[in-house]
Length: 157
Image (cartoon, rainbow, N blue to C red; front, side):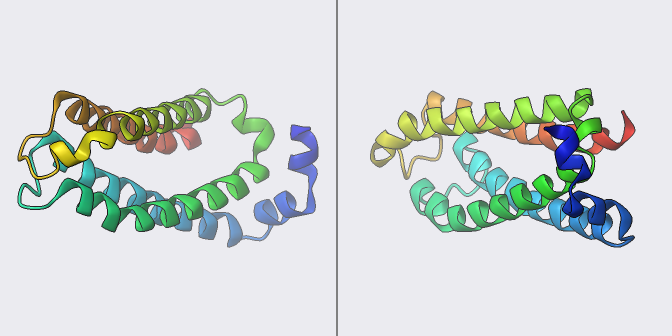
């Protein structure tokens, strides 16, 4: 199946048309920057080290559309980049680790949204959120940082 993806006309075009891969990679990096940047703002609020004067819920609600929009663009561009080197990427330890870390970041987000976020009314304006929210923010920062680092390593392994 991976060979079929690699041999597709789309993947071949991405590999052979000189500007496509770097253009997609640039869009992917810009999108990932927006994802990580908006998430970091929320994570720093959850850690209690930034945006103390803002409602955590309002901050989350305002940034979430930008985060999801940028994530969608990153997913599309990342998928297109994958098609062009699918056979190589599935054997690349950095790529596999990046996928695992992305999964863990999603799991962390789900745990936060089904846990501490459900009780946000009780801590929304607190300068220091409860331990579960702070833990989610810390893990999120670490996981998204790892995603960026592993993404950079893909081309070198």
